Image (cartoon, rainbow, N blue to C red; front, side):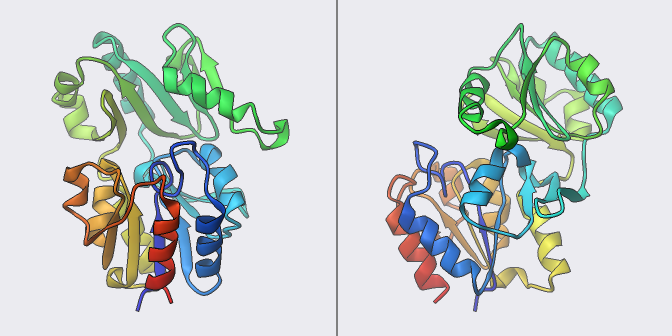
Length: 270
């Protein structure tokens, strides 16, 4: 019945230690031998690549909440709806007015401020540095986002942290040009207007001539709602908030009980 499996990473395929247990890994690899399995993530492709490789997938990946599709095999962006650089510049200046902390996702790097570091990026940098240099995700501290913007080929999204996000969300610039999705208690992801995991997955499936009813999507966060609603079978993790779970047809165990997700996937695609 089902032809495509779309999997979120953080809080879904990854447990709270940011690892994948052997049983879930084996289940995903087994399904990928006969079905189209792909990662659909809020992550930058450089931060998702180690897990994509660990799972042995060869399919493209949908990144940054549906902003672009990346092919690791060809090291190529297949399609994108990146943020216009003029709007990116306005966004940086507006965030500064609101005293918000920023992470900027450019073509091949995740950039954050040396002067106002974001704590989760410090942890992510520590994780990245655990890989050999040739495989290390590119995470860069910058003195100026505006200077970094000048040389950027693409701007995929911004991650924003701060205490005045409610008012920031209501500004004319954000309302007109950006799609804001909550990714943590005090953190929002801002991609180009119209971008979502669901929209990107819908276009990708159409190119493969796969009906959305023949898709299974699994996720745990607000940015997964669009694909949970789209898929013929939307599965929410037990660790997902009630607002996310209400858009799913099935609720599985939390992401630290990965055997339960493995069993569900294997039975669904058997």
